[in-house]
Length: 140
Image (cartoon, rainbow, N blue to C red):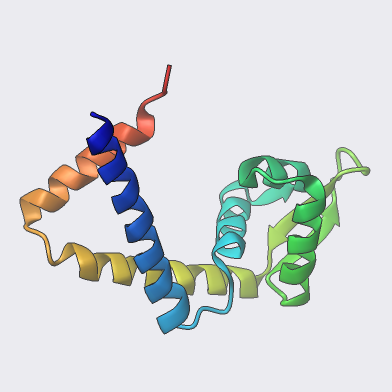
């Protein structure tokens, strides 16, 4: 079993590295992978507290502040005071942020689709089912 775990881990790392390389280097994306993830999290929550972003990104709130500063300077997000708790800051996507997120996600999907077209349809179906199953499992 240890051998299989190592093979799976190595394959995941290689797949991620190759995918990121093709998406972010060859296509020349205007944002980094962590910035993309941050925009994605913000979009899913519409307006998001900085503390929630830090939790989702598994980083300290100070790191989030720096990343939000960069995204705000690029015009992708804007900050606002929480109307319920004026001490809290909310961040939301700007129209430019939505556009860059949509375009980047579309390009990522194109790269994945191109890779999946090299598999048989039943292999793609099995892969989807296994990944969905793994995503819902909890380690005990």
